[in-house]
Image (cartoon, rainbow, N blue to C red; front, top):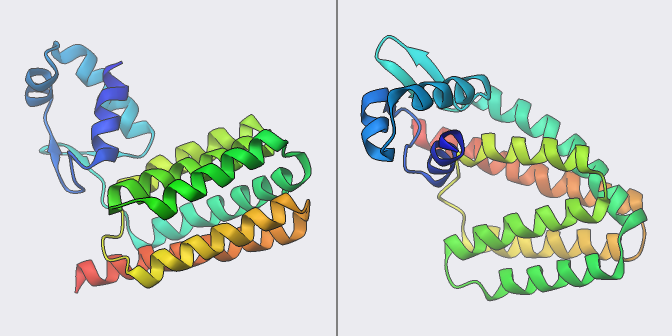
Length: 203
C-alpha cells in the first residue's frame, strides 16, 4: 500500500527528479512508521525510480541513454502489441478505442489530454489480448512518467491525434504489419520529443 502511494506521487510529479526522499519526512506525510516507508523505498529503488545517495534516496533523473533504452523496449513491445490487436481485437475493443480517441480530441487542457492518451494506449494493449506484454508496457510507462516533456506544441498534439488514427485504422482493418509500423513511427517521434526536452532542460 505504501509502495503504491509513494509511486503514485512520484509519477504524479509530487517528487520531481532530483528530490531527496527521507524516511522521517515520508513517515510524517503518510502517517505511518518508518518501517513500511523503508520497505517501500527499497522496492522503488529496485524498480529504478529512485537511487540511494549519502543524503538519502534521490528521485532519479533520466539520462538520454536511459530514455533511449526504455523506448527501444517500448517500441518493440508496443509495436508487437499493436500487431496482435489487429489480429485479435473485438468489436468492443474497437468501440472503446474510438470512444477514447474522441475524449482526447475533446480534452480541454494538457492534463486531460495526457490522461486520455494513456487510456487509449492501455485500451490498445487490452485489444492485443496478451497480458504479459501489457504488464511490461505498464512498467515502462511508469519509468517514463517521472519525466514528461512540457513543451509539446499544438502541432505536436495534432500529430499525435493523426498517428493514433492511423494505428486505429490498421487495427480496425486487421492489418498487423501496418499497425506495427504505425505504432513504431508514433513512438519514435515521442522518443525524439523526450530527448529534445532533456536537451532543452540542460541548456
